[in-house]
Image (cartoon, rainbow, N blue to C red; front, side, top):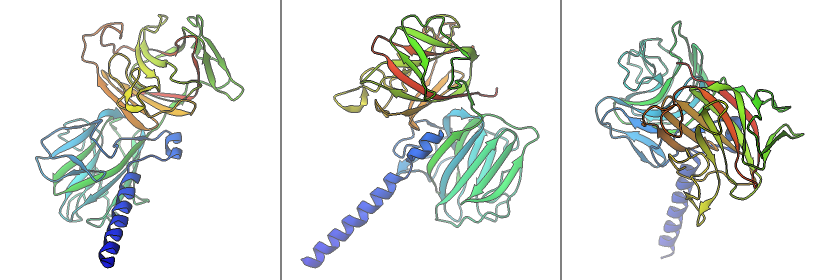
Length: 389
């Protein structure tokens, strides 16, 4: 009996260790969140991804896996331009797969409509670490049935790739694709991916931390906007708004926010009608939840698209700094809070100048909302980059 109990105890320890390791995967560290990284895979669902064929893409043990089906991609619903990307993969000796960068959803020519970073045996014309139809790598060493990590930097016309921390290829494209989806491919044989995270690059500050240059208070009304001694933008009281002088259409916006109260209400408006009162799409700020359940936002939830799609989870907490990443690309809008994707929405309404009434693709201003007399929020590290056409 004692031996049996010891075996059970040992099995429990092994299982607990495996579960802890699985939970640790696909999670960003506080340092990564602060640096602007976002997670493309939450470890549990395929939220934020779309298949392009009938491949059996599924999630198991904190991994994205595929084993069979016609050749195709699992692609992000969001497009990216300049970025750092980390992705871990495990393949068999005969697997043929790849990580597609700045890809169209259905690429037909890897020399023109994507960058296909291959995962394939050494016998392949473009083995692991190569860009298919573009440049072959002969230095990669990725053993089968083991986890390996690609670290990719895509900046303008140059893409640099590290495998397990060692630079294996740099490709300079004289006619670069500057924007597109991230794709995972099944071509032949089982493949698994995990720890997929991305950091947008080339963002520029639009708040200088000294004054409100680049912003106007024409419709501040009851709200008060000021810059603190710490270089933070503070808004108290409301109703009112602070509006950017510049307009943005397709863009990536990253910022940090601190809600100095309980379940206060505010928002970031975008593609707004310039000079009008909050006539734009709204990315909500509200950390309240129903019955303490983070999957039940009290009022759309931080990162939700107000009146369009609730945040799928409350990730941020009041009285703590949190990050928000907002990407608007054509009719598609996605938001990450503390690096966790909480919304993924496509506006399929008829076009209208006012985003409250329909689809607006035209550039518009950004607005920080002062919602009501209880408003008390601070912002910092406002950064934006416009997406290439």
